[in-house]
Length: 106
Image (tube, rainbow, N blue to C red; front, side, top):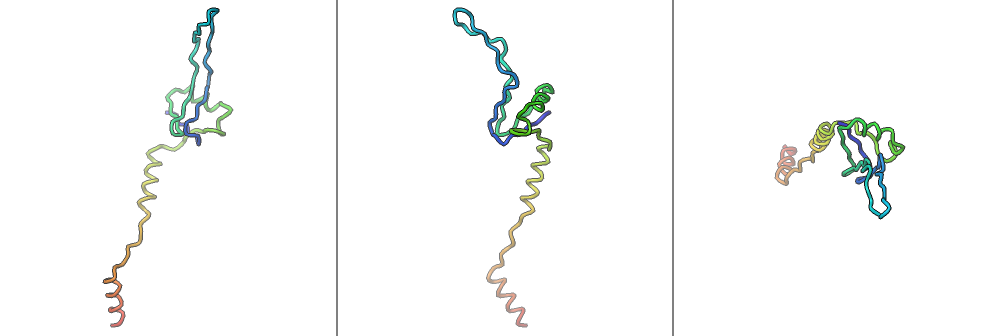
């Protein structure tokens, strides 16, 4: 699986533009639909090695998008551990504070 990431959420790249032909009477016939790569929410995944190699060879590679090296499960687990490691200090109640004051007087 090849993963690519872009800072542009809905980036579209034509690796091969569509090829069309018009007949004499004005009818359009599609010779080749082309190859369109569409990023969704800034991500694109493919199992096709040829498309991945063509994306890496693109002149837009490194400018508008790049290959995503990390595994999504690692990123999610790191995010969860950061969130769970942040804890708010427990606030002491008035009773606890007054109890401490009384103990310090003894």
